[in-house]
Image (cartoon, rainbow, N blue to C red; front, side, top):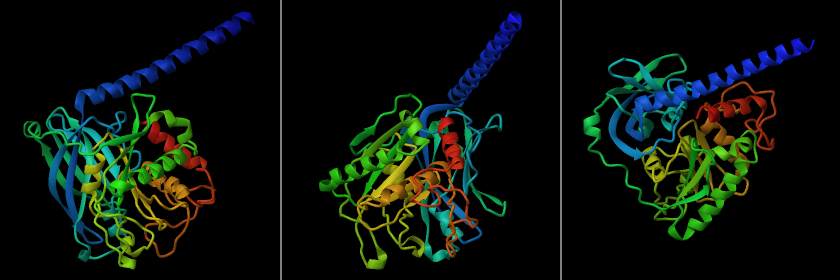
Length: 375
């Protein structure tokens, strides 16, 4: 019996050794894959996009280069969730896809709402790691029907890109939390409609929201993985546009209430300015605080989240909307007449269903954790 127990323990030890060896091997392989194909730099691709409810076109605007890369370095060719837009990087020599990511945008929501062409063009873009070898970047529109429409196929000319200087960082940055790991997830808070005299007001609101996020599992379990910064960029005027109240303000990113005729929905068709402002620091997720007390907000997957910094009831909504932007969590409630909310109410209690429920359900926790672990 004693021999049997020793043999059993030996087998267990061997299995554990193999398990950890595989994990280490996969991690090293992922790191090697990134280092083999990419520099630790970021390419920002900007384009304008326009169309109707069933089709669209995109015009290339330009490239920008940002020092450092804050995106994923593991499972580079796998999407957490295939959303409305996809970006692919294909190695030109081997024809192999070396990077794939998915995101949504305000234009995609506009298409879902079936608006006509009178809304004009949307200035949008996407961040990708900087390839070491000649590559092709493709931007693809995914439709719910299954149709995939390639909007842009751009050849990366490394020689020409070498002449582009890195983005100039114009504004000071305040650290709200530092990660305790080198493979961090970088969140940046951006001020919209806060004047130079109101930066303390912006920072106070940003700190409250950062603190609130880590009161929720699973974010609380991975707090050490997050870097959180705030860019101190003043707007010319205080407040933002509220068309239904005939209020107009000059701001940095052109955010407005009443997006798509929904009073509480805050959005901007000028994503170029969002990514430009965010690039004053390392970032993967941009959270915009607008200088207003009026209830509202919004969250778009891998695009941005936006909230009124002066509303005392916004903290739970922030956790809800950030779930959309960070992990593509679905709304779990019904809202007849709003095409942005999927039909089919969930039976689970979750903050994605009811803001008074102060936790994510088990399914949402798993989705959030899967994004964190893929860093």
